[in-house]
Amino acid sequence: MARIIVVTSGKGGVGKTTTSAAIAMGLAKRGHKTAVIDFDVGLRNLDLIMGCERRVVYDFVNVINEEATLNQALIRDKNCNLLYILPASQTRDKDALSQEGVGRVLDELKKDFKYIVCDSPAGIEKGAHLAMYFADDAFVVTNPEVSSVRDSDRMLGLLASKSRRAEQNEEPINEFLLLTRYSPDRVKLGEMLSVDDVQDILSLHLLGVIPESKSVLNASNSGMPVILDEKSDAGQAYADIVARYLGEDRPHRFIDDKKGFFRKLFGG
Amino acid sequence: MLTDASNIPFDIEFKSTSFSVPVLVITTDDMDVIEQKLQDKVSQAPEFFKNSPLVLDLQEANNQGCLIDFIKLAELIRKVGLFPIGIRGGNEQQNKQALRLQIPVHALSGRDVPLEEKKQKSVSHESEANAVVSSNITASATTLITYPIRSGQRIYAKGDLVVLTQVSAGAEIIAEGNIHVYNTLRGRALAGVRGDVDARIFCFDLQAELISIAGNYKISEDLGDSVKGKPVQIYLQDQALIIKDIELHH
Image (tube, rainbow over all chains, first blue to last red; front, side, top):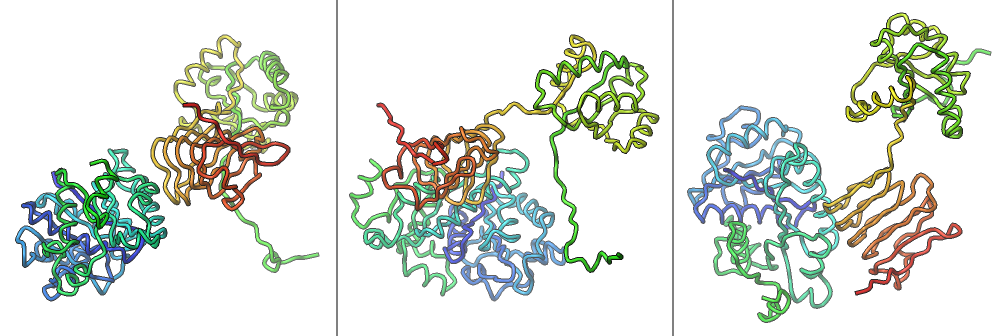
């Protein structure tokens, strides 16, 4: 059965697109046929992060409006042949998305793909709403600072009340926390919330912590999802997250510089 | 003096709202019996029924073949001190009579009384000989919340509210009765919002943005460090909010 994953946050600039690209690539690398959809109509970014911006012909809105078929619009990734990208339209706005149209495209994708990753735009308006509406699992991307945590909390409320699963009284969306841009040094200085602080406020299952890392920016600039940079800390953190999502038991890393500290914290 | 309505700066406004109105289900055409039963009911709770509006439901009576003169019935209701404000389930003639008395005709809807309750009512009809006041005062049931209340969410409980999960900052929980939060309370909690000064708030970990009982409130800034993050109960005493530690015995 195909699963629809939404990568969402409420707040902008926390790393949704970086995360979408990384986990979609991670799932595909693990042998699962995966599609990643850019819901940020009008502010198209995913194609840049995935390095396929020069191969965009048709986009998500074209498919919704039946101006192109799904196969025409899907771009096969150059690094992994199990990964496909459905780019957003840059010339339209979010009003071009309709619930009925998005549902139809997702249904069609579900026939052929194991995982469908929906890269949500920031905010809680139409684009973000439609990105999460059909989701089975939600990756809530949060930075360790209060406004991002507050926005994530708001988004969790919407996932629990305004999604298809909520409206049809089905089993709720599985919610996972991804803490990004984490810097243990700054936590120590009191400049950032700690993992515990965030967990305390959101009480959510922690899927992983992505350290603040130069490799993320490098990856974005070169159009390679950071998970392909296997030597980088951020790349390894995303690989851990994909493994945990697929049910593997992996100890958390990158929460503190000192190795012993984490064991102390979680009694591992 | 002639006034042009469009020159008046104030406008009228239509708003849609719903009211809770008692419905009197009639099951007999014996006016004396109805009057007697109504008098009995009203004398049991004179304050509640004083000037109370009433919708008359004639469906049952008409189904049983009773011949009810609506004008006489409305007269009787007024005599008891109640205001008939509507009719439903009436036949054509009864509806016409109602309109002549400027009483609106309401459509029957199956939704307002649960089936179970309907059954019970019809049982009690027999025992109480044909006239029953069925008011829709809901018993102030307790609302139980088992999922986290997130920022931006709002919960309203007609009676007591029991929350087993955390209430996030930016969330709002409101109850006409007491509020119990067996977790961290970070949002706003308003108990006794319809004026119940005896309502209380209980919580395991007080970090609220605002607490209020019957309109008397304190904001986060006013909460002393001695009670922050502690299990407390909050109640009104001489119009002052009292926040008191709850001693937990281990």
